[in-house]
Image (cartoon, rainbow, N blue to C red; front, side):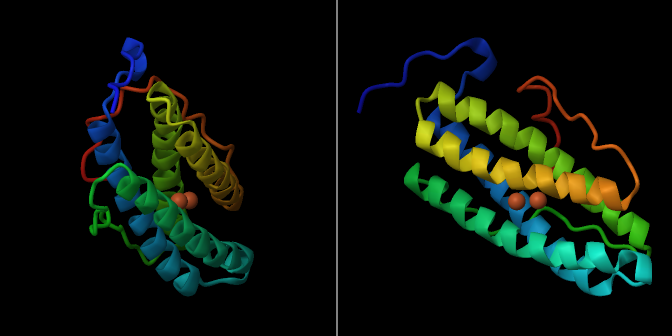
Length: 168
Ligand SMILES: [Fe+2]
Ligand SMILES: [Fe+2]
């Protein structure tokens, strides 16, 4: 198979590196499934009933994302990861929503990078799959920010500024 054309510095990436990064994404999807499964059931209080229902919907969407991402990793000839990123817990509803929002912010940042990286490799169909996921992640961000009574944070930044965010 032909080598991919050299990409611009900003998006320079190999197929192997893309598979590694998608495995990080998959670990974040597992983290999201677990936290939404748990938080949706333990959030208490009349003011949180709506968001608890929404979190239950998020849980199912995150499972779909995990399946889509695993399929892409397999397509790239790699083994999908089996390990979630760590899930934080708290007794407090606000903390749970805050953890979810922070994770979604990280997820959105990463998928924005991933779309650029897929396109740099000429993997346009894969980029499209990631875009579909990204649309739902942004909805999750909005749901959580709204429940917290906050603006949706601006998480735009350069594609290479966050490779150090390990273990989160
Ligand atoms: Fe997701
Ligand atoms: Fe999400």
